Image 1 (spheres, rainbow, N blue to C red):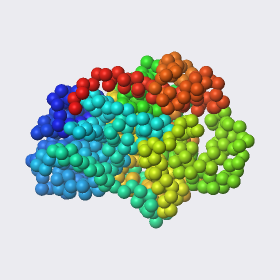
Image 2: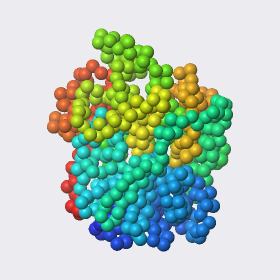
Image 3: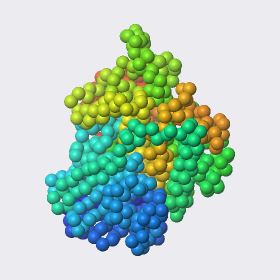
Image 4: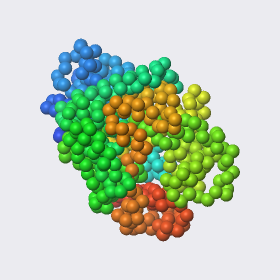
Length: 614
């Protein structure tokens, strides 16, 4: 895992700035390469071929810098016998794959990556990202230069950037920065399963997609009977875990919670590496899953390490938020940061359960989609005129009320009502091109007659929730501590196998992740198999009312940046607890606005420091 960056039409003082900004992603080595008007920057976290994997790697007229891991690169070398390999690094394999197969290479690779290949002879740079979009890559073009980097915070230090009102408004409405947009005008993230070609002379570029993920949702991957599908899933997941452990010359650990996703990974990893280290975050009270994790660790005989973070939050919160380079409201970024910090003291690589919920239907909102609740409840929606608003998030009444509310909505409004729409009826998004782009995407999926209701939700979540939130969260949280996170559920075979499984293999008798639960029966303690989905929850309501109360009140004043989007006539009563909404929703709203304020206050400071290079 590494940090990469580059500039076409660079100025020398940019390069050391980029190195320093990305050093946390690669503390083991930092290099700069200059050729013609192109400069490439690489910071290395040494994991494979520790002694010989320095980048850029060169071959004839090509140079490559690469962030990620190719898990099957040793197998792929068998198809590259015409090349004389100099290292054991997957970087070398990747470059030769490109030279031989060009863009057909992407059909062969099982891995996570963001790379840059410089073709000096043809004055061309190619940027590319893996199928699931695990590894970040941002780019920005001006009239005179082109910039790219693994993190927004690196770009912000070398060229002036202006906030995007439309992207921020969409972020508040949806909870994510909808791809390919960022919080800055004309700054974009390269999409998953895409590559960008740019001419280094005139800066013209084009972006193409190389993988049609939707096609796998539309097809049935399985004439397999259920028992056969469980066996196939077992084979694929075991192989994926094994590959992600084998592709490392350093020690590997596992993030472990009380859920079945991480427990399956831990159970399989412990078979390969007895005594493997597992890491768990501990909260006090209802959010504490450490008891379940400890039970699992005992069964798998792992070396278990747990971390209590309750005492850390106030002193670190703004540093954590600023590491994302743009507003980021997913509060699970906080425990992700701390568990990564602890893990990095012991290992360089960890495995996680990311992707399982979106592939195998792990969220509770998939149950109404599976059984078409909205259709059956639509005739009851007039009751909303007389029913009181719920005041307790986890009550049965609240669940029923939300189902009724959802039943009267369509397209993007429907989707947001099942996920997060904390500013419903407050935040106007009319004439917003970013929101319109997201709405168009969602509508195209909901109107697709080849997809079931469940698969529509899964595909949208994969694109919105996983791509734009969960993978971003984990990359930044882990790389802040020079820790690489690998996701066995996002292996090539599983990305091609899981989407086409019959719906009833994923949800049955109102149980989510049914096929995973069946597989879990082979490995997990009984107490863990039927645990409800909690997510990586944090005691947000407690934090907002206690540890973070003072900084939130200090930030959210009349005239604060947030009032450009949400009137203080709403913010003030929220702070004073004078609105009739649930405590959980109040906490989410205040938290989201606080995240925005922290980013913007820092943004003003940073913009005053950036020299106008271009």
